Length: 351
Image (cartoon, rainbow, N blue to C red):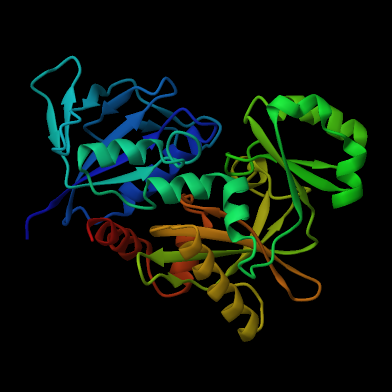
């Protein structure tokens, strides 16, 4: 069979640039080179695209604090002629024709529908949610409002925009959500900009900085219970993995706990739950995936409280693919090894 030309896109200008590099390195190491011609396409923090040949382009990939892109790439751009082609910026003879794209771009400009729109213009099939599903999944406000009335349980939440930030009253929020509660940007991932608020001093300290990350913020009730994640895979007929539990060794599962502190969290895979509750979490995860118009893949996160109720928290349409990331580890525990998982995701994109 003819090998598939696969473009793997990584980096980007979001706060999750470094984790994107580590995820991409892991995928490239695992993928079946007998089936795919790999075209690594790195995006630096200025949003400049480069094609990388050879092996040494993601440097210091063992360390999330030091990992970075090599400067040896050849600048490229989309031809935007609906022909799946990329062309060199400096070297006009450089042309890359792709069959499918795998965006490993976490956060803004990669997970929010931005690059998916470019792929659509280029006529290029790609892994994961389409433009609409990406926009919905990335925006916590829109996602939760879509799910309201669906019967899916969620924590109480309030949303405020930057135009009214001077009118936000801590006492009003605390009376509705109780303390402690969380504040977060509505359009960020990996717990970037998420803070646990215990007092008015906490709130006053954080409220101004968080609006630098987003024009809208969400204040959300704190749910006490087990933090549970479930992986979903598929297009029209998605399936769910066994769920896993995250036990954070920090105050909550922050960006630092996820990626910067090697002892920041303990993962229990699969989670120690009753068969009935596992089935409930899987069914809810698939339902959320469908209602939010996702395709390909997503990780659905939530909590199991003291009453054994499952509370949906958020969805991640381009989950991490590092060696410790839950999305591939949950599928591995469910009987699908990482190489076959990547292969299936590419098949779903081509479908």
